Length: 116
Length: 112
Image (cartoon, rainbow over all chains, first blue to last red):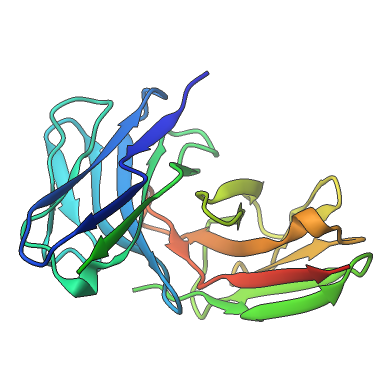
């Protein structure tokens, strides 16, 4: 079965360290997204990609970067982790075609990051 | 950007009761989606709505796409303990064909 996998599921790091969260999907979806979830804020979009070599900033992109070298993967990098980046991070993907359900997101299970 | 107002923020109900939650916006949406998030997991799609006025059911869940395209509601009938979780609405705005706007979620607790 197709799936979307995030790793690690839990990570503790120190302020100033670089951290990369992995996202891998086997749906062959064109679109991939990274969200963070914090109490009181719901899901906020960090970065997204509509295809290989395409990346775009979301509403809370400062301090984060992504790269899309293939269809399956969109790693999220925190260049210098800050305590404000302690959160739960969700990767999601969608087909991005022209059918009515093309933009329905499928989510990974999440990565809980703690920055000390 | 587009804003979705989801209410209520939290609900405590007795097992067997019906539940209703809704999302509203000052702008129109082309698609409305309802997701449920179990503790420690990612959101999972419950119902997708694609046309204004559409009423769709999925077991004990019923959702409607408002006629004005600015709102949607989700009803859960005869709640059970496994209904516990966070429910999110999401909308696809016109002109943003590949992105969704999310509500802030409704935390549902079902008491035995």
